[in-house]
Amino acid sequence: MDDYQTCPKCKTTKYRNPAMVLMVNACGHALCESCVELLFAKGSGACPECKCPLRRNNFRVQLFEDPAVDKEVDIRKRILKEFNKRQEDFPTLREYNDYLEEVETIIFNLVFDIDPTNTNKMIDNYKKENKDITQKNRNRQSQEEMELEELLEAEKAQQCEKANLYVNAELEEKKQKHKAREKLIDELMFSDADAKSIVASHVQATSALAKEQPKAAAQPSSGVVKSSKFSSGIQIGLRGQHTNSFLPIPKQEDLPLYRYTAPVFDYDGPPPPPIEKLGKLNYFANIRAANITERAGGYTEAMSCCRALQEALGGLFYSPQLTHKTAVLATNPSTQDTDDMETT
Image (cartoon, rainbow, N blue to C red):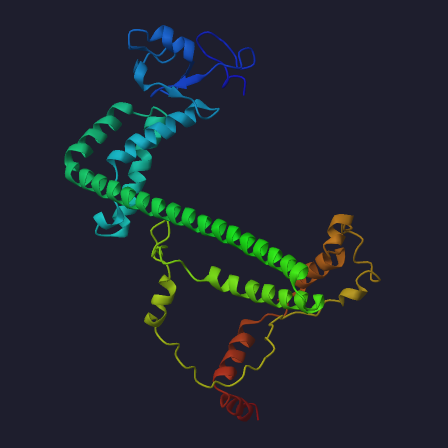
């Protein structure tokens, strides 16, 4: 943490000088703003750490604590400006994925200075071979950004207009309440009618006015333009427009209900003692007792002992001849009668 906040040239730290601003360039090594002005007073110079030629105009404020992250961000932006192909520019998805992997390999090599000479040659060859496609995608991207900015501006204007409508509606409601209050006071002062009837009629008029105001607020103003897209460019109501385009759900035939059949377990061995009687038969003598944590999860030493006995006794009565004969009887039951006749 202290190394990231220290200028490698003048050794000034952020602790001693809280106003210090670290700046980075293409090589990824940080320098404080004072050292940049001193070392690059003529406009260009070499990095004091890697001796890489740098220009003063290319220095920018370090955004992350680790200058290597700023270096990667800068390299990624610079590479993606040239390698801006899209999926529709490739005949198959496999080729597009290989292209993305190649781009990430180039960025990785530049970030960690792995064979920079050949990597830069590869970038130059790509620029020459794909100049037209790169320019076409740039124009397309700028057009999409302009459309997105227009949508954002229209959405912002709509929100401002909606806020103004709410403000005007609140002011109008306050005026109506003020007028109704003055009207009630005047009637109570100068009218000869009963005061209770005057108050009751005032309450009815106020409640009727309160019911009409939500209806008027729910109706859109004639000057408000409804947007057909979200700010991201997705059509509004897309789901409702394409609901009928899905295929109908196929009707399923009436099938018989499922019936459970117990699985056949070929143990081929003497049955082990029941798990409840293992402790009484002293089977736990040479088994480690379960600790508190294991018992909390439901494990006991009887489980491992029973499993060990099953694995030890299982298969002791196994016979290939009997297994073959059982399989033959399962496939052809009529052979059982033949075997009985031969035995007789």
